[in-house]
Length: 126
Image (cartoon, rainbow, N blue to C red; front, top):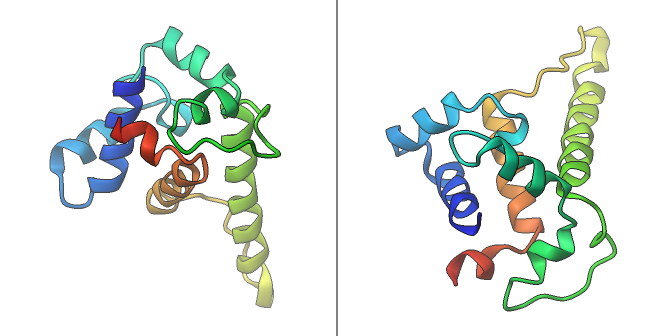
């Protein structure tokens, strides 16, 4: 699974200049891209249920964190909801119609932030 997740992170970081990465991301129908073409459905289910500590412990610079027992699914959903809520509040100012849509660039930006927050850098270099 490490290799597949590393490939996902690579695609997230390079999709702007890499048509193949953009195509793979565009073919993903899984929430947060956790699923095909990167992971099988079974691998995705396992990954989403895994606590953050299990991913972080594989990193060479692992340090315990307050959200270590949070599942990857809960972590991603909470972060996504925070971005949507922030956007809703900003777009609702001035009497404009609120915009609750999280566009692809924001979704991918969130993903890069999330992977960095998980401190996976050294995990993927090994």
